[in-house]
Length: 345
Image (tube, rainbow, N blue to C red; front, side, top):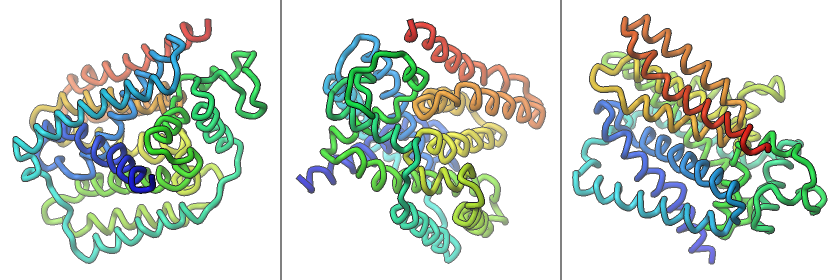
């Protein structure tokens, strides 16, 4: 069973995300085609697919087991198709690897240290009780938002529905079901470490954009400096460091660790891209859906941030089209936000 759990974790957290990520990175400019970008964009695609399917299955009053089967079939078959396509087209030859020098080694050590810190810390706040409680209740009762995870009784009010669009706790339950790992262990240990790895991959890819050509030696220095700020910035329980290192699997912590940095990366790529950038805006739409799965607050936070960023990029590159292409992302947010009116009836 342990071996099967390990294999399932590799499948759902590495193989499927990497395969889905090739959909985007194979269309990016060559310098953006990195292992980190492939894995990160693939994971947000996996989360976005689950989010859409969850909203459908919840409205149809279906079970977690049914959602698990459908999601797994769709994700496995889709990732298998794109993985075969990636191998046939020899896409592995086009992937850019980081410069493995002393600086990158230091950054890798910081990453390992952050993961160790994450696993040594315990979290006992109310938000953790909400996330793990919902995940465990869904996992054991096989239904969505039907049982109060504090009392075990059937929910009689609609107060819980303010969190309805955020499917992250249910995504944990879904992964627990396919990996045969308890939701608390999966979230605290495996997902916490995995999300930290993705976070640092985004940070390093940002450094690759900021420091190019003759400044390449500063990439690892910048990424290591950001890691140091994260490691030591614990002056308040509301800092980004607290979210990233001690509450990593929680929705708003995921938004802080992945959603916002990935939006920054996309804005930098849009500003620098000299070729076709339509796939970057398509990635922004997928990011929008996955961020709603993390926290409904992203509906306005990410929209304002990304659209305002595109306006700045449009001024910098003198292309109004950049703002127009950002509208589908804002529209996708508005469409999902409108679901509140449907689901709260």
